[in-house]
Length: 193
Image (cartoon, rainbow, N blue to C red):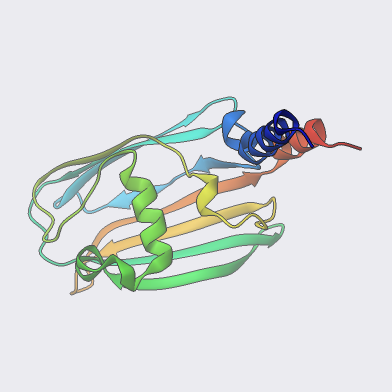
């Protein structure tokens, strides 16, 4: 086989393997439908805005810490809708946030989510959490952090932050949907059959 043909085949293979990135192809979208929340207004002020675009949903979050917070606990749960209105918990964890910020390797799932969040703004990075404004701008859940076998379904993410004495700082429920319709259409376009 001639060298030019081998180079052309190698280039074709590289292009095919990189086509997802090069063509902006996404296997699915993570859409956020709502995010009801409440917070302790003596300690923080929170503003969350959802932006629905044609091909993705983004969040703007402003987290204004009104006083230094020395220790904070995070409880989070992720559940998928198994049947209409019936959710199955995939993950339910409670973490000392200060310990996590010092040693992220202790919570691998939370670390992946947290590092994805850090790409979109200046969010909380140290503990104690100092007074100031922490924000995310146009954050979208990167589908690359989810396993490829995740089903097309609704999901919820419950988040609760509280002090060691149980005093609530923040509590919210992010509601969303995993939409694979775009990925399926792209898959059909690239199929050889």
